[in-house]
Structure formats: C-alpha cells, structure tokens
Image (cartoon, rainbow, N blue to C red):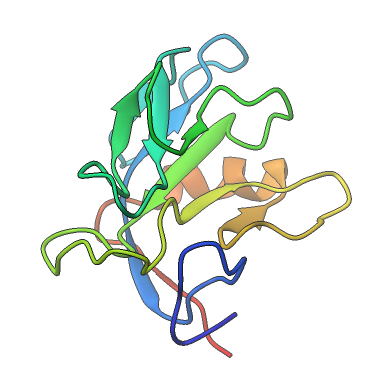
Length: 141
C-alpha cells in the first residue's frame, strides 16, 4: 500500500475509492444481484494501462495497440471485477498515477495483486447485493 500511487509500482493506493460499476463473466456466472451497474465481459474488453496513450486508465476494445489488460482472464480473478474510481474523472486522469485499480476475486492462495483489492469469492457474493455506487472502499495503512 502506498499513499502516492505510480503506474506499475504494484501498490494499492491508500485512499477512499467509490465503486463506479462492474463486470462479470456471463460465460461462467449468472448475473450477480447488485445495486451496481454490472455488464457481461466479452472477449473484446480490455483496459488501457499505457500512460502515453489517450485511452489511459479507460476501458478499450480489443485488439488494442497500446499496453492493456485483457478482461477475459483464464485465472478467474475477473469473473467479478468492480471498477474503483482511482485516477478517474471527475478529478482527472493523471498520466502515470495508476490504472486498472479494481476490486476483484483473490487467487486461491491470496497472493498479491498488482495494486488492486482482492477478496474471496464468498466475500464477493456477500458484498455484491449490499453495495452500490454510493459505496466507498477505504484502504488504510
């Protein structure tokens, strides 16, 4: 965890972050019940993590020329993936300030993320019907 997040540092920002919306894998799950806007991830969904690109820290359509994450991961981490408002409007999108900060599913061994917040599938199932766009996730040191 770091109070000053930089692209590629592997740290989770110490901050309060709203959940903007979410994605889920419709090929693996029934649409979860939630107060959030949730949409099915497709094979064309990505997220730009290239600071020099105009689409930095935004969803993009694949194939995409610049650096990006592919949302249809084989490892199931993004079977449910909630977008946190880190480095997003209305406060701007600052180059190199960190991208793709999500609340998603944890690895079975709870190994580290690259800056996201990860929870067990059971915790995500419990959280989803209880959260909405007014929910703030607080990361404290």
